[in-house]
Image 1 (tube, rainbow over the protein chains, first blue to last red):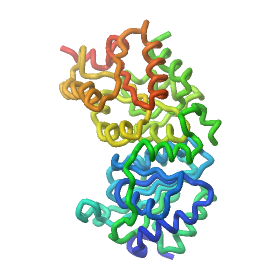
Image 2 (image 1 turned 135 degrees about the horizontal axis):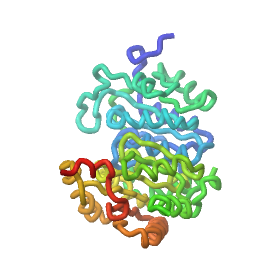
Image 3 (image 1 turned 180 degrees about the horizontal axis):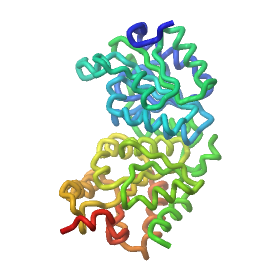
Image 4 (image 1 turned 90 degrees about the horizontal axis):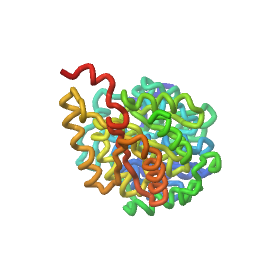
Length: 208
Length: 174
């Protein structure tokens, strides 16, 4: 079956985020990029293992890589928009070289800087993020064909080892949730959710 | 012990394992020393703000780390500091090798170096200039402990007075 950007079905980010969260049954960490990736993660229901960013466009994948390195037995998912990942393509090269088996990068690609007025991104032109990730060295980098394929890819991601990059072509509907912008509280909840609260565990081997 | 031996030993004593860096001539002994020591997990980043993100994520998941960069790289991370490290109260340990002063040949480096301390001061980030081998361990050790205890970042600037400066630069001076 062909599996490329042109044939990928356009999916709803809000619904797909809910679908993802429903399938996270092992307290996987989820790091969501600024804007709509965040809003839809909130809308899918708060989990203690969610980290919400208030800025730092482009740093979703680096933050997720740090979490993945610290806790190699926990699944870690980065939710990032096309505009944000285009700002940090080098991070894909870093991740591909570090090869964290537990890291999945999901790109919501609607070809626009949606939150700033729907200006076109490079992915609306000739740039293919799945191909970029392959070129960076990701062995597993795929377009999501449809909802069922998404479920299948999410469920199998640890079987074949990571890092994995999945790109979904999505619509331009706004994210549904409202983010509470209280960074120390976001961090504290996330650290507690990962069993790393209070900075009292300097040795990573105590965490996993 | 050389200054770089003291730095690596102090990082180790404080349980810092992750070293995320963009390389530099002055940092070379730290980067290679960390890469050859099993205690450390070294990650070469493509940009300095990426290294800040990696160390932030690792800290929140229980792994302590340090970011190493040169002054021009520091000029790339203002947004990561202002929107991630400072508001989320991340005890990021930032080791910055100081280019642009005391024998710099590159006017670009000389200019970018002027943004280092004003940026740190504007964001209210504690910084110390490491210029003396005799006080190096004390300043580094106490600053790391304070950073983790008070949930605040700290920048440690490696002065040419300590490191001898960029060896490659010296040959280019008139």
